[in-house]
Amino acid sequence: MIEGVQRRQVEAGRRYDVFHTDCPAREMVDHVTSRWGIWVLISLRSDNLRFYELRESIQGISEKMLSQTLRALVQDGLIWREVEPTTPPQVTYGLTEFGQDVGEPLTELFDRITRRMSQRSTA
Image (cartoon, rainbow, N blue to C red; front, side, top):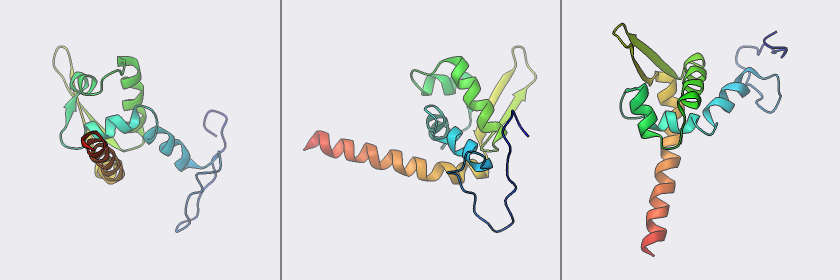
């Protein structure tokens, strides 16, 4: 049990059922589709960024929310975190292969929306 939630084991080859509250994949889906999770994944799509570069690229996110979102996405294996032992420590984040795979359709969705918005504004 983790924090009072019982998790079911999924047999090899079976799909996860994210509609059940005890599905292990549901938490990851929640992290990816959270208010800030999508923006972190999209921001990291083309380059690795340091914490403050990420914060600057995502307008409106607080340091606290960015830290919480990054922590969850690192634990999920979607992004990696590298700490350089300097004073102060420099922390860099980037997408793992899994994160790139998950982020690809999000980037495509983002690109489709921005293309449509451009078309609407010129019409």
